[in-house]
Length: 160
Image 1 (spheres, rainbow, N blue to C red):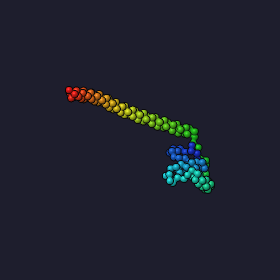
Image 2 (image 1 turned 135 degrees about the horizontal axis):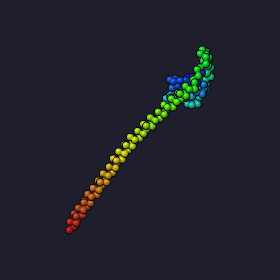
Image 3 (image 1 turned 90 degrees about the horizontal axis):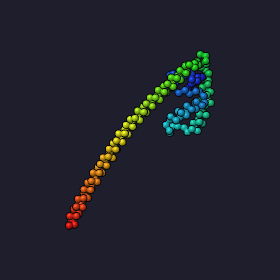
Image 4 (image 1 turned 135 degrees about the vertical axis):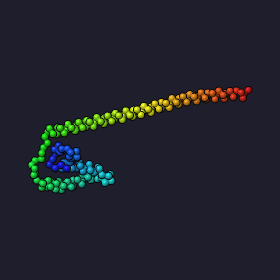
């Protein structure tokens, strides 16, 4: 939880963690997020969660502010990060995101190429089955023709 510090003032490695400000909106958002992580049968319904938060916020805020005030200001104002430091961090984050996106795209292309190869193999296999079936059908038709010819021959002999 951030007290007297802005999220932009937090540097790595702490900036990798969630940064909830000690204000009503941020605290309620964090509470809703935590509520969603609970098993379904433990979660509070949205309106009940809101009512509970509303009833406990004022006493919490009072105690929290008292605790912050009691710590005093021993070191003066909180250090403010310079713009160059923040720009450097932002550039590093963007580059990391680009590398991750590029790697994910390459993995996707590889997966699609692999799947295309599998589909092509399946197509060839099915095509071979169809061709084999057509050959088999042709052979059966010839055999049927031969059987019909023999049957006709036998019928003609019986009629004489």
